[in-house]
Length: 128
Image (cartoon, rainbow, N blue to C red; front, side, top):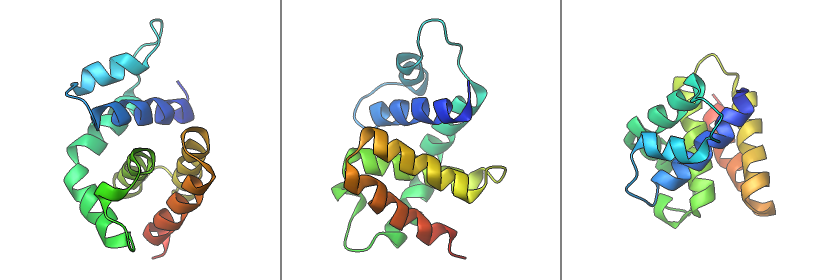
């Protein structure tokens, strides 16, 4: 599975986990097609984002202006959590790649404002 597809599947699994009582394994199982095997990168993204969610949410809360995490639409919140996990914990992926992938997820699953909003928030993480 390519990394872009793994990120899409990770987004879908995290989206489910945000509003259900599923386990990580169940959520990943729901997004994989029957012939697909679970992917190491997909597992790492879902587990890492879930296990580090308190740290990720704290980092996001610092960067959000005039917004709270609970007020964010679920799509944007899920994309941001996934991207911030990668920015903070996956040093082998360039920041530009993480940002581009997050923007593409927003274009696919959100509306035209989603990608601009996510880009603005994530750019605060990469301005060092």
